Length: 414
Image (tube, rainbow, N blue to C red; front, side, top):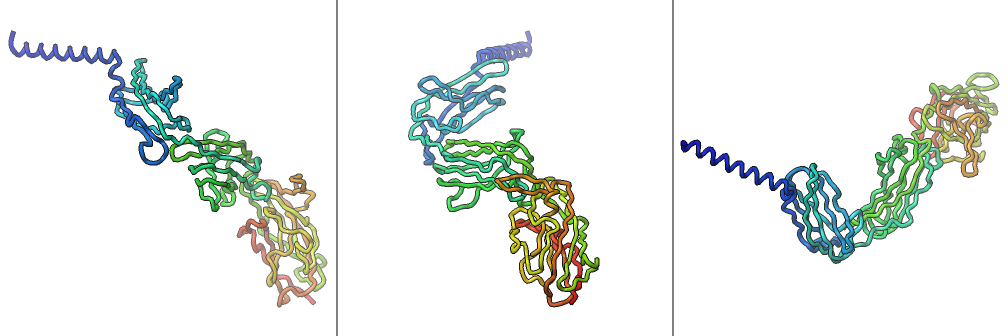
């Protein structure tokens, strides 16, 4: 037999032998999981920077579901990783003694690294692990509260804000957020800056308005979970939850229709008002938003004297309420001294809230507002004075398009 052919058969035989060895090794399961190590074998997880964690290393020869768990002296399993999908390759992960947000107590344990391949082959290795001087105290969120639990973020001055409070027992990183009805969407909530800084032990409070104060729409109406998570430096974690219902949420929007105001002397129909006579106006307000707007008296048609204002008549400002106002050139006092509800109170929706009757102009609704002012003296240094209207969102803002609406010169006669 020629030498070249003999050499070929020798090579072929060697390859066959190696293939058989590889198949036997694979079938025995010895090659699925290898190079497993846990170092150091003793940890003291207390955030002092010294042996707080141990590094777990391993290698997979092919894809498998990988589990890492800790066995206590009673044989209970504490899963650090439970059937996590892993591809072929080398892996490392640090373990600091925390399982499901709780530090394991001091003691002697057995670690187990286990791999299950797609064909059912299983391989595992184990060793010892000692935990000492561990920080096992969880950060507590004592007195966790949410008020009110029915939240209407629409700037009407009623239940527009939510207060979230708790007392944190130890230093920890805390996050507070809403979980939407879909159980997926999260809405973070910022903490109020106080003397107690975020994460420090002490009393903490959150003020949530749904983003409406910044002109953004709040989360959709529905039932939400308020969730707070506190995690300390070693990984101890505490979760507190409560519920919150969002209803009639949205940015309120209303205007004086067509920016049109009709000023006139009701006796003559002209824009000349002798002293002692009355200046009347008529305008229309529309709620073009998606949420009700709250208003309060005096109702449409109320009569003022020029030396009166809404305060002297006992109709004080109400935070979040909308009212029509009349102002004039040369006014020496605060803006819009003469104010009316955004419609006839009897034609608005009435609700009993906290023992009070509240009035609302509903989305899409229009209301005619009228009123009169008896001019008792010269209210400026001239006989021709500009009057105008405004739509005031009290203690919130006056939109540009609702301020100084349709100014008109009124001749004040003698």
